[in-house]
Picture 1 (cartoon, rainbow, N blue to C red):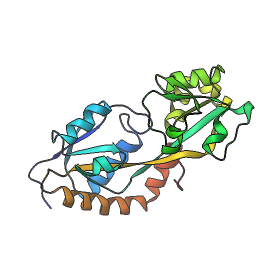
Picture 2: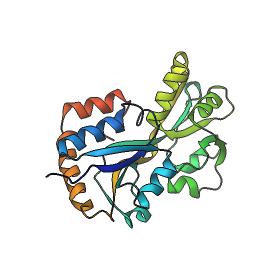
Picture 3: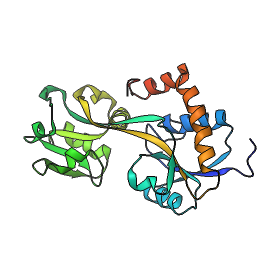
Length: 228
């Protein structure tokens, strides 16, 4: 089906390993759009601007979007194309484990200021939380024993640690299960007349791509598990 013109796709400007020049979210979206024969122009921006530009109709769609009820009011969401497990990390030598959020009360937990972790996590006022500016700072504070735990996107922590201090990768370890498993979607603005049709075309192509070895290899190379 021919398009009158390419759609404008707002996306995050930088979020390794999901969004860099050609990483997991970028590669999956590019590949699926190609399979679906959807022409698009990518418009990278910081998250808040990308979100607002799509909500206000300056962009036709938004990638790297978590599904929530508020966004469903103005967007038609695709099926999910990549997992984002929100995972706690500890120093390996500390051997920390947990079954429920209240088990974390004794520990000083670093989290990026303004981050969305999970409903149970944010509702528990007994948690000892330390605001962190970014993932690099969180890793440094954890290795330096200034916090006991650090929580953020699992793959993002692993990728940042690899770039920041490859010789220290063995010092910290993820704690399972993740506090929450978020998923990435494309949010098509409902104000675009063919938003529903575009979402359906994307979904059909995505199902085909997710059954491929290429998709499985992408998850594995980015430190994500297929069962997510």
